[in-house]
Length: 214
Image (cartoon, rainbow, N blue to C red; front, side, top):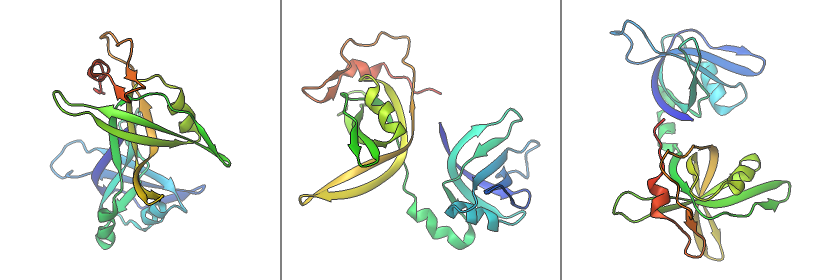
């Protein structure tokens, strides 16, 4: 999973087909390069970002943020979560995106809430000789089941949005996950006990065995 922030220039007028909008663009700066990086942006036509895509004009420059993947023909395909033009520049100030990497903490039970399921589970990372950083991820429905089943210490990358909730006069920071990837472990031996449920800790050895090179 990759989330890119790209300055782009519209190559062709937007096309709408079967409820989706497609815009062909090139990455900036492109004037002094022999080979430009081509970007294909795709979003639902009735989505807020899709409506912005439809308004783009040929040769217009803009900023795009979103997950991407590469096509065999050398084009990057993006489903933008934010489009920033000159007339909506303030939207950039409303960016709400976190990217967390680390090892999963102790297992957590999946909870049924009406027609939905949710799992709240901690992820931890620690730089050498520094205090462990903890975040509690919230995954819903299909992602919820995956998060609940994986063993402690599983290397994880999560992307989502931050919000605040209040319960019994206490405020909580929520990390709602939109996309999540679980990575294979390295060749180094994995500790027998990657997490200590009693102390709520992921062992230093488990954290040290994570490899996030992509």
